[in-house]
Image (cartoon, rainbow, N blue to C red):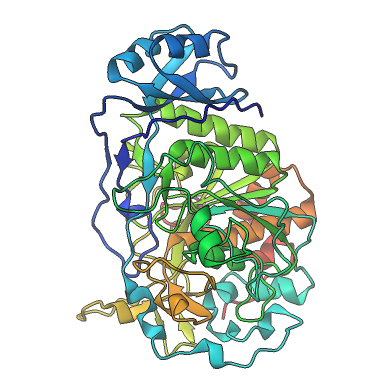
Length: 506
């Protein structure tokens, strides 16, 4: 993939709020803010072409309009240009071969509150003696992982299906704590990267007063010797360990898959859309069999059809390279069938879109769990978009009672040992704990990526359509028969997907 870069950029002053794309402690019916465009004198734009190739005179046309070409993605049909006024951008739209010229939107997640981790205030996991475990059920806190038992991952493990180190999963997120007990040795350091210091990312400072998109210097300063893709937030590390884990603290769907980190957003989980697209291309070009998209992307497709085309083009590129793409539906309770203006990665071509389920009640932290396949009230839904569902946690609703954060049954997650962001929900991680808990479609999507990796180890690389079909066909058909707006084709079933005999649900 040819990239032509210019290293003097004008900052894009375009921001999209995406409150509904975060992992949330408590479900909310509030709708997230849709895209809003700031009026700028000169900004950065995505230029989308009518075909996959860039016109030969493109750079000259941009220069004549007073701007510069920052990056050309020559086989997916778009480029990034900066320093253009609104009038210049309008003139560029009329150039031959140009389909659209639209702002390089800054997209991100709103800050989550800390109630997701409130029940860990007195649970000092650092005091638990942990021995090296030979199998996932031997993890110190496996008893709390209702989510993995719900999808019958233990059935697959019992038959010896633990994944393969030859299968690579690229994680587009806040980075990975590659020295974590559950992840050490599972992360390919040579392929892992941070895009936060790239020329595209440096100008994506989304909020005045916050650090710029380049978090690499923060890593070097606070954690000498750590590689730049180190996770300062914990979201990326949590998702990573659901996909694959050494199973010292918590189990993952696989135990032997290989991860690599593509750090596309900082501890504030924000960046320009061009950086996210660059991350997908990087993952595909570096041999990812599965690409997990922990990207809080949402905007109005009516307002930005060119960006929709660019996202679809990049997703198609990764698909042609043989990668399975998995994304979370979002935690905004959006009706994706009837709100036709929303666009998320879930709406992109070739992407497996995952909704969330969870148990409605439990006697205690370690269960027993009741109705583990209830629809999570916060999950986005829609027959037109949802492919499958996965366990993300939900709220125990009892008639006549008031919902509180304490009634939320959460997914248990590992902490990054380098968590810094003081506004994130991961207070236990900042306090030195090993685990925290939260709810969100991200976590249902993470175990789906783990299942995809397990299937690649059985079916071989380069067959994304067959992998998707296997995930859908093996899912438990819940809700309405057939394709359901909340479950899609059903809640994933790891045991059935790897060809095992089904067993009664617990």
